[in-house]
Length: 430
Image 1 (cartoon, rainbow, N blue to C red):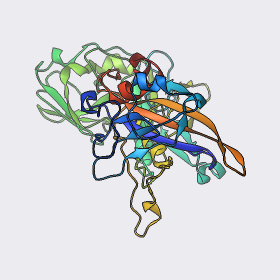
Image 2 (cartoon, helix red, strand yellow):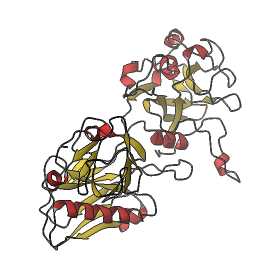
Image 3 (cartoon, rainbow, N blue to C red):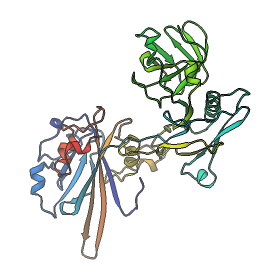
């Protein structure tokens, strides 16, 4: 994030996999050669590591720093001096980033699409990006479909989805969002295992209408199936319609698969026979797509936001989930680290020719919680007295459990957070 130039902002990153036993003992002078890469510690004005007792013994007018190891081939990172009596801490646990979700018609439990014959319908999506182009002239994306002489909600839903996803594929920056079909019918067969080999799977490829499986027995054109993330069925999971049964192992779908290419366990595929499905209510689910991110190339992290409307104003358009960049998402941490000031390390490579990226320690796809030290101080010399203020954001990498947790062995927690009395390990859990 961007801050005023008179505000000293620094960022340190604590890696989850560094054992506390690898740290130099309290009282040891910390250098680039003895502080492991990814470890952070509190040091005094002489760069000696402070443990709890030594920190407590400091006077309110004594100074300390946060040191971060970058490896023996790189300089030791040292934060600005912080006066013990002039700082405060705030903590925030990790909050996952989310994508916007909006539904039109059925949301999986109630609502419906219209089904008038020989009628044109359209979805209008307005991009809400906070960039120069979309602030002055927002981009609109449309999906259009005209119903047949003997239509149904099913025909209109899949017709609009096919046109929408085709138009979205033409977006130059990224897919922006993905459209999927909802139906509020629970599966007649809670899993394909009731029809197919229970140990088999169904192979679905992103962007393809072809699905392959162990055996297509008992499947017919017009049948629907819901692709879920587990054997427990959820009515908000996307639904696909079988256009044709091509062979004993292959079917063609009405719409391309929008999920991640995978061989999906047949227990996660829930069957809805044609006669049951077509008689029920349909809807369209719009979900934002995660944008590409590279901190050095883009220097921006955002979620795709949009406003959706439908040509028939009587149809429900519901905002199910808002887009959020989260707290401690790896993209935000890399952004904060990139724009932070780097103390006395001379990190000016970006101004060189050719430019070279600065040090980056935040790991892609990791989860972080944050402890922020905010400080103020008075600088006095023979001629003038001035004030200084700033902060050090301490990002603590969490483990890979779900939900993610901060382990007690994390060096950032044991060597910094506990020394500063900034909270307990569970305060930083996801």
